[in-house]
Length: 177
Image 1: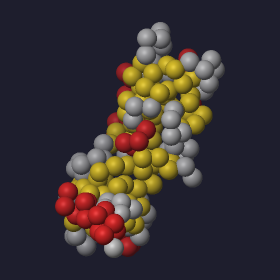
Image 2 (image 1 turned 90 degrees about the vertical axis):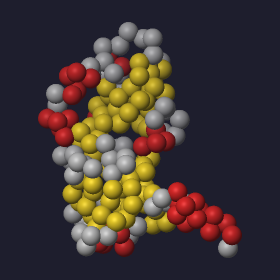
Image 3 (image 1 turned 180 degrees about the vertical axis):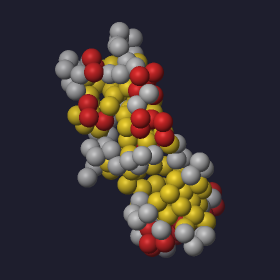
Image 4 (image 1 turned 90 degrees about the horizontal axis):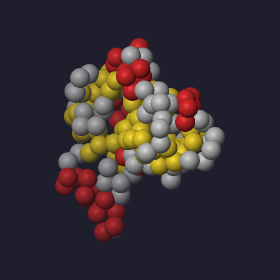
């Protein structure tokens, strides 16, 4: 499993393995609601004469800390065609969504999305409890385990997912102790 953070991959160069040429910059990740995962990567094209600007997940060879490597730039799709894919009818943008448990507790707001680029599966989200809480305690990672419902602006998670939530940010409190 190779977990990537949504905010860390934006802006990475996109390079074609066929000829080693930088073909663009990673502009967005298209997440779909159906499989709770990545459908493709949208890029901002460089000056190359490319047919499209969407890389399907299956055409990604690797996604490292410094670049997205695609199999062949000729396999890029036009966004208009990609948007007509059945899974894109339910495209989701999770950042800013409120998170609640099935017992009605407010967990916080989605700050970032964690996904495995090899499987495309969204593995969890980074949760913000507010600026002061984030500074003092750090941000938590909420794994997507159990039943998860995603509405138009809210996410409902099982109580067990909250029990597995990890404090990963550190915050000022960890530096003072």
